[in-house]
Length: 150
Length: 155
Figure (cartoon, helix red, strand yellow):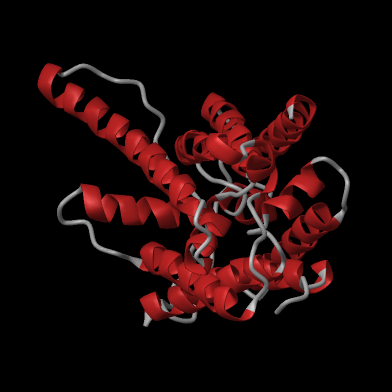
């Protein structure tokens, strides 16, 4: 697992995950709803882990296996390159804010890269097409802005 | 059994995302800055596979293997929230170079910084859910109609 999987293997396998969840359970695969189930479980009494929550546990387990057999990260992208030495702790508030934007934004938009980007677009849902164009466009622009500033 | 099925799909999803470098911020960044085509080729091939696979299920009029219900779905009409939410989401995605699936996988991998991203993500989701509850409470207390579009199953 030390070599990155070829895109023409990794992409189709992820696509098949969308198909598998639909075929097995008639459910839409989405990582945001998986997180949401976990948050509901903790914040509201009476809510239990359903298939969404178990999907999240599976995601973490997949990460654990890759953590054991795969290649580890060297630093964390532009953040560890930009915030060095005494300024390194600044990465924490930046990632907290980015995470909050991701969580609140994806819930508002009804999905993230998996829920809208894959599952929603695969059924040609108009809202998902609009959402995907918007978040890809925004992410590209913001990446170029970060690149210009750092 | 249903939960176990979801667990297995999640496992394959998380492992493949990790192995494909979706949990590596440099891979994301190189994609979004058009330095490397991997991210887009990966995404488009995943999307095409899902599209064809779901089409096949539809044509075969398949029933869900574990629930027996007919496989079906409905599209959603675009609203303002899809644009506004995706603007916020896209910005956060580009800053953290990770989205919700890979963030969960990063936690599993033991990527230290993902603790901060995940904490922020949980806070963002909690804030959204809390806002919904507050709106419902307001209706209950004051009998006001609060205009709020129903949120369908999201991902």
